[in-house]
Length: 494
Ligand SMILES: [Zn+2]
Image (cartoon, rainbow, N blue to C red; front, side):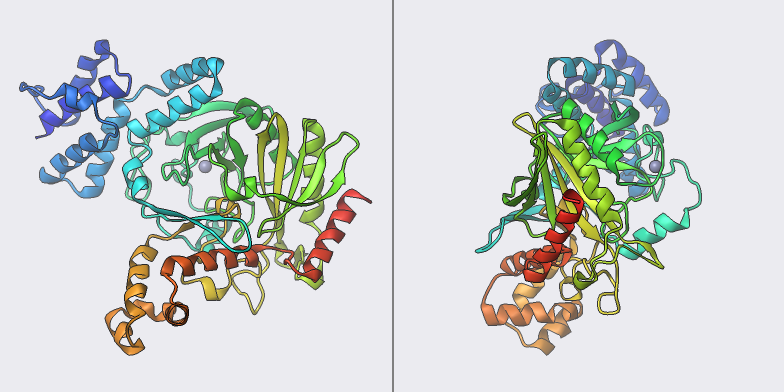
């Protein structure tokens, strides 16, 4: 019954969201008005039990169930529940104040506060995220990768993302999911309700930014740092300067950005933003293959022993590290090496960019630059340095920063398809296709598993490694490594 659930929601907010006793009746009356009720629930509720909740799910689930049984549609009920959680959360300015005061004690305490609040007010759907499948892939040759099957996020394809960037979609409010105007927004059928989002202001490279957490948290403390203005993503030396300010303020977090071009970038290219967090992605802990340059100020440039082509710059002089990183970005943007299929500019425009990361290691600054190119060819219409067609049944989406750094986010459909494939291995082709017609694109996988007797997980591990090798602009062979050294030489020694 909705009256009872609302009373429980108030009790929950008092014990988990910092709602003060003095404000409780005030918000109770707002909720009565919102739901067209004459008076609050008069019966008892179990406040002790509510205080022991570690997640908001019992409250949110009761709210949506009550609303659905009163005749509201499921989407609208979900949005209404978000409205209640947002109303009962501290206001944005209260969050800013608390974050700032904790930040003076320690940045870890501040980021932890915002993370915990975002879970407790249901912005991060923690229970859904916990259901995602996650494992570590180990190999005889090469670094471990992390692989997850994400059950909460829809799959997008590269063509849709490119269209979003070029079409200048009709102006809506808010303009996109990363605009400041999302705060408190009630949501529509096509735009999620955001009454419960909370973010805090940051100053990076002299400009206004905000930090929030990702509702999908792909890894621990997965944060999103977004620019105050709705402007397209642009990777340059300025990006690295903003990164430098971020890691100075939050030395326990890494920061990274998707590239600024389709295919090799993320799903939102029209609003400048970064992603970071408290988890060390495989790229960020991979070893140096060789040191290729040392600056006068002692910064060391190395090639990483990782699947994608990545250059690391590390040193204690921040300006020196940033300027060496900028050199790589500027040089790579218009650098061509046709012997290795790398062409930076043609009639379709610019194809070369980087996926940058930065973190602090023992007080030193470390910049990681993954060289990217998004050119397509007749043989590879979805991208020469993108997952090749033989892998599309596993992953077709663009390889953004998280995947380029070795954490794969695979689509939800794979949970069902893997189970079907495991079953199909002991069946004849015509029988499994009759039972599961969508396995038609999995024939190669099934044949291979029949021959090798490996599990679907082992097969997926191989595919993910193969995809990163596709993404490498310089292959791990003589021609590729020669080309990479030539690029390094022209960047640092001339
Ligand atoms: Zn925006």
